[in-house]
Amino acid sequence: MTTHPRPFTLFTGQWADLTLEEVAGLAAGWGYDGLEIAVSGEHLDAWRWDDEAYVAERLALLERHGLQLFAISNHLKGQAVCDDPIDERHRDLVGSRVWGDGDPEGVRQRAAEEMQHTARLAQKLGVKTVVGFTGSSIWPYVAMFPPVSAERIEAGFTDFADRWNPILDVFDECGVRFAHEVHPSEIAYDHWSTVRTLEAIGHRPGFGLNWDPSHMVWQDIDPVSFITDFADRIYHVDCKDTRMRVGNGRNGRLGSHLPWGDPRRGWDFVSAGRGDVPWEDCFRALSAIGYDGPISVEWEDAGMDRLHGAPEALAYLRRLDFPPATASFDAAFKQD
Image (tube, rainbow, N blue to C red; front, side, top):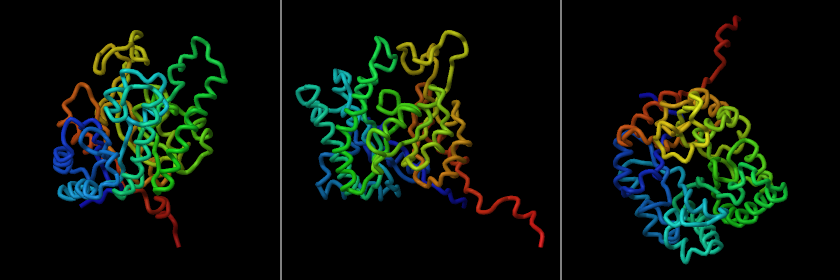
């Protein structure tokens, strides 16, 4: 039997309408090695990090299905840490405990507290990596009009550092790393904003990156070069694909406020292997930098049933995760 050099996991964020027991059963049946469990829905509650019985029950659930746990995620609460404005969009994202009375600064503070609890929960679960978002107070200015001063942009990176350094202090105390998903609407959303984000927090080791190429392709960011440029910061990998449809002169990269799956959009998320991500080159680059962590399938495709897509994506990606060479192929040419 072929041994895959890296474990494959299913990210549960898009499956939070099901119980974790249900998702685990599906994932195990499809052949996944483990789960990337989201602090969302019924799957994980970060506020119960110090409840030993709760932690043991979650781990026992995975063991029953023969699944491993390499990372957990908390995208939704991380988003609220820095966001400005905080408004009705966040109410459903963060839940009633973090939302409280909806006062924006209160929401940010409670979201930050939950991110600290997420690090503590990860430690209790024996996990070394938490994946998530950071939010951004300056994303609304991405079009740079009305004109935005350099000072305002700098203040946004300072705000990020001021809010996230205390969170990362707890991560460090717990021996857990944060893997920020480079993603539009976050403080780091492309190559240069990632450079600036790392600078803002002094390149502290507890803050790294979750590489997800789907958010790079539609921005014309090369996902392969991103791997090699930030080789020492790739702490986790999420696999999602993007299909571009901008060649007809009508469909734009910004999406035109159209819903997912609308054929007038300039791009859409699709099941891995059905879009424009150069997956084989990406896997070769991950091997070249020595990434040996999990390959997590984040399944999103508005035009496909997820019960079909999740196992299909796993099968497609597994074929590309071949073991790297142990010797140079031309070594065989050497004569005594």
